[in-house]
Image 1 (spheres, rainbow, N blue to C red):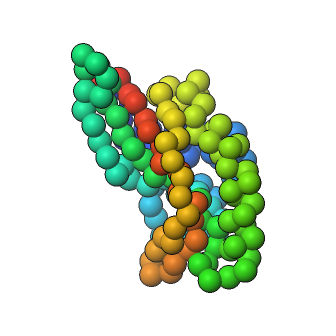
Image 2: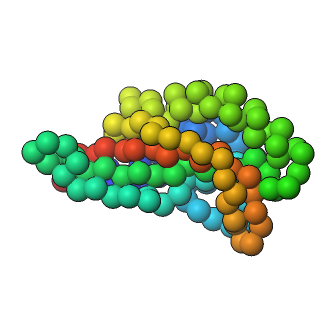
Length: 133
């Protein structure tokens, strides 16, 4: 069974190594240097997710912060991330690297506040299934 720490660290490591993203944070932290990827804490935890138990499920937000909210540069970076979104999804869903069963179940554009500074973000919702201990 992968612990929450293991899952978050592995997602960050995959995005850094395979995705080539320079500023990747394995947990919410401050300050950040944009553009960056921040692995968030689970928004949902489901026990016995599969038939007959055996697997637990986490929904983990992965924030791709492109820049301060009200700038043209952030808008342009957002456009690039949305166009390249499938390559990000490919890294997040590469189960051979993570040792868990992952799939991106959604993405959204939103404003994320870090230490009182608002950043424009493409947020990927990643469903992670991991075996129970």
